Amino acid sequence: MEYTREDLLKICEQAFVSEDKWHDRDSEAAQSKLGECYALLKDGCEFEVIYDDDICGTDENTIWLYTYSKGFMYYESVWGNETPKELKSYKEEKHFYLPTQKRLDEVNGEDWY
Image (cartoon, rainbow, N blue to C red; front, side, top):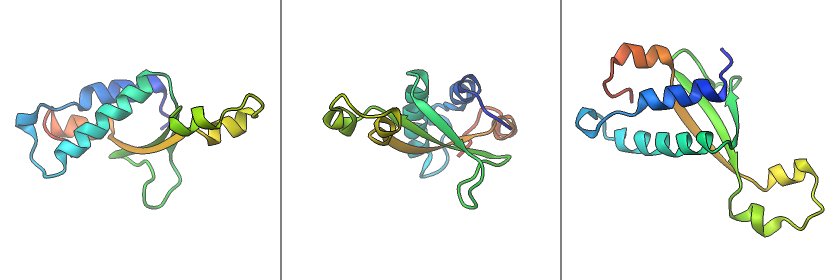
């Protein structure tokens, strides 16, 4: 399945789970990273869904993606004559995972991690 920004934002919004429903030692970390991913997607940062990776490839349960945002090095490295490709290489690359809609449906509002 191809995921749009709108698809991913909708999934993020549904994936937030209140603390009283967490049941795994990594639930807090998953929720924190979810919030960061949501913010970067909502802010319009570039993203890429990963499909063809044997370890971290999107499947029926998990969506793997990278976001690219203007972090510290972007502003420290920009001198005004970079190409768009060079500018992208200065952006911060972050790796995230999200549950799929199928996974969210299966847990019915409970902790998906």
